[in-house]
Length: 431
Image (cartoon, rainbow, N blue to C red; front, side, top):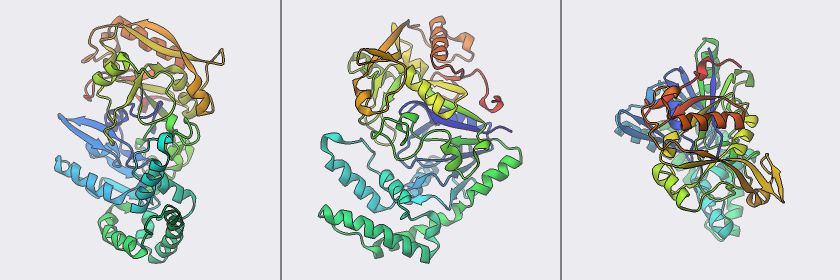
């Protein structure tokens, strides 16, 4: 029995959906442990494209899938996602989808507040998806969150709603906006409660029981390390912890059950929204990376900013999460490039540094120091073994491993599940 935690080592959009889908064949249970419906995981199965935001990627393979307590849930978005997947031919039953009773809810006033505050920032926008994730996490930390269990405990819901709405109405009054009506929130919650109830359970016990039975558990993260609320490019970050240790907190288990950590790293770098991006290419290179890689946000449709691989950043992410294997994705996007660059350091105040600065103002000032490698200018798609790859592609992979001091366990060369080279099975790795 081995448990694997999957995290992104960049700014999200690394291709976690495909890798989790590939790994879920070997897993018995897949648990999503943080984020909300701002996540976007794309999975291709039998030439059908499934786009998931809240549902764990294992659901596509009909594996027991858990939405953990660390996730914030928009119940209406979840129901819509379930219905969309059903229309694509996959039935989501209460036997394979389980929702933690301790997860916090995203309510209409969270989305409203998110939009109001983001618009008020003008040129200093964070670049959120505007879906209420941040305000929902704020309510959670502020101890005024409405949790899933409160849907069925009228006394608890009454107390929590009074606290939450008093808080939010004070803000809305200051913005000259209409106040939230408690009766309206109760009405919509009463409608959604019976729909969700069959899915709700004590998910912590499910995971622990699976572990004791010798089953493989796959913990699925959303976003990426550089969007972590503590360790990312603050304040241009998401509202939750995206590092591997959150798999324990966000699932209700002890850290000893996190056996192996697989970091997902795109062969280049992308970012959605505002914030520092040292290796960004605002030129033909960036345009070409985006065009070949189809770099548009799954959730928002926004065009992603594109640049070269940043080994300094990936190395930082590896240390934060104790990553012991990397899944390198979208290698095929680089197939046509004559030269490929890797950022091996930053120049800041006339000094070369090999660490990620603590403040975004310093991160904005750094200039990337590049190592230039020869491209392979031939297709990597359909390669089944690492020995099948072009010579210069293998050199690129070896150089990445050297720079980040971590082995590459998997290599993805297209969106198709079959185009995955397994170097070492994460479920068989031993710390």
